[in-house]
Image (cartoon, rainbow, N blue to C red; front, side, top):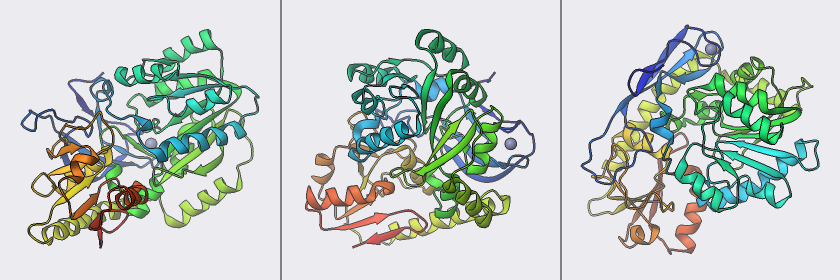
Length: 411
Ligand SMILES: [Zn+2]
């Protein structure tokens, strides 16, 4: 049990070992999604730091925040980006190819607004979503996606099994690294998955994060940072085995892994990634220490770049995402550098970013300020945003793209 809102872990979330080596302290951060109605509102800050497990090599947060504080009113609606909606189509096709059933029952853990279940419904599948964010479950149900407003766990999985039967496809996108109660959720998945079913997991790949310096993907909701090796280590403890993978076309650095209860031969893609991990040393402690050092250097470079911008310039940000919160807070970029950030999600507009107190606006309002520089905080959608700037807003100024690796200005 937790005392207060936060606790420090004493053992690895995956293997239970107490051999944890801390290597990256990002300082005190607010919860990335605790947007403010008023910039003078009182805020809670929590330490944010990473450890590496000396036994199973999993990289993870040292801190666990009480889930009920983080997830009950999650201001993120999956369907707001066109890239994401397009991907949900592709995703359903990939999933159905891996399933052996004609009309599978598809269960999604942390299904958000139901965007990823809708293409399955169109293809005639029976679906069920589970998500704890009550405000977003309402949207899903309105969209015709049956959704339980619950935290998925072993107990809920028993209820689902009784009422709906075993799931032929279980989808867990960007969730297995968000959970404080990982063991409970894995037990639930193992329980509800049909013996010949397929579990499809998408997560931000820690190998890519290490290579391209995605330190902005570190935030309190994101507790585990899996490589293929450390993810398979977790699966095996629940009698589950990866058999294939795809690279996610969105979510720069995303990996989609296909898992079953039956141990079969690994695909070529899996074998290849195992080899790559070995060559690049993505599970080695010394490389994670280097990562921390590079992140601190990146912060200095970005601040130098922002301070060097001509006086009288108007910089507007684009994308008030969870990831941009870490970048802004870690680098100390606040409303003195950025008066506003454009975000297409109407649930965020009119609010202020956590810790850095920058106003979040619609594109219309943001562009009406006549910016000559756009700081693309949602850099993993840089192509889509750049295209929109040119085609919709006839924007002729410069763009700052902070990551991957080096911050840069494109004139
Ligand atoms: Zn471990």
